[in-house]
Length: 203
Image 1 (tube, rainbow, N blue to C red):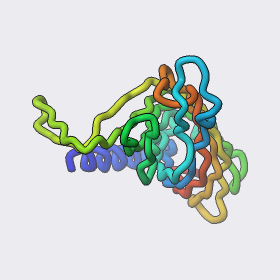
Image 2: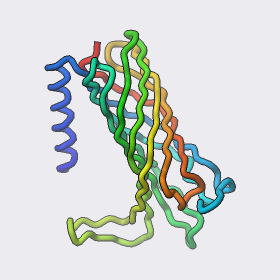
Image 3: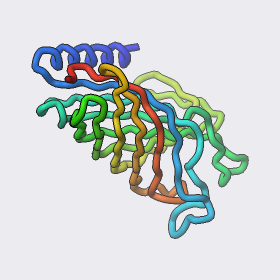
């Protein structure tokens, strides 16, 4: 609940700033999927298990503070359903999440179109559901999964289509370059999807 309150407060702050100083704040929600090399293509230290497939909801937002076209943004995407990790006996259900923080370039070059390009860093977090309850002595919270995290680089792009006002539809693609992703077949994964969003403080 505290995280939601903090996020809501941050959104309100961005909205106030965008209105006060003529800057821009965008939020969007989308659905997509992840494509990754197949298990049979694994080589070297990589395991014959693909991370690809599944439906991925995603939330993102950006704050454009330089001439309404350059700023910063953040994204979170996660697999809606669990997938089986076939290399354990029995297979272990798992769910990957991707979160990243980016520099964003999104000029509204025409009232109905705007490119959306971003590059940054983040992490892949893979949650393995092994049937055990894990509790933290520091926070006192408990989960039914264990997490494996890997640093990653992120490159993304899309095209915002504004059919009316500040509402937009955005086909998009994201490339994740994941360090030490040896549990899977490759250090690379690509997310494709479509988002709907709204621009505050735009033209």
